[in-house]
Image (cartoon, rainbow, N blue to C red; front, side, top):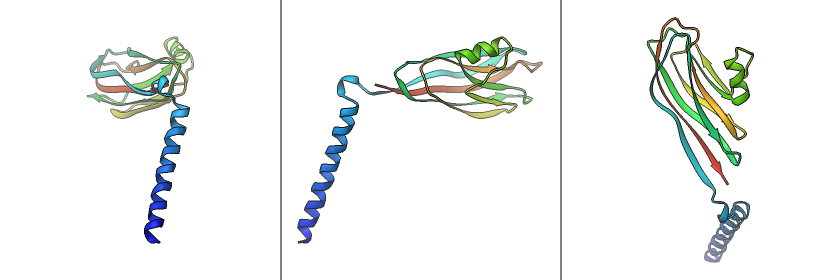
Length: 151
């Protein structure tokens, strides 16, 4: 009797697994080629001149989902007046023109931090290294990438 119960339990587990796989493939057919994409935005040591900023443009396709920007930076010899932002196109334009803006990510007045932002739609985005408020050039060691899935 015990062996029959174990056999029935194993059959039930296999049946649930098959059902789960069939539901997944029904939602994501093989012809759509679901895939993970990881694109580097920046990786290296950058110098940002006094009173200036550097920006890095990256594009998210319209069919992307679960989009995350991740990374970290360290300002070498900073006096805590350095900012890092991630913007969508509209807010980047506002930032450039000195207007009010709303970043997707912002950290400032630190010498190092983790970068992290969740993006919900496709389009052009900007990672900005901002040294506008410093009288000195700043050297930044920065790594950032964007990861997302497409159908």
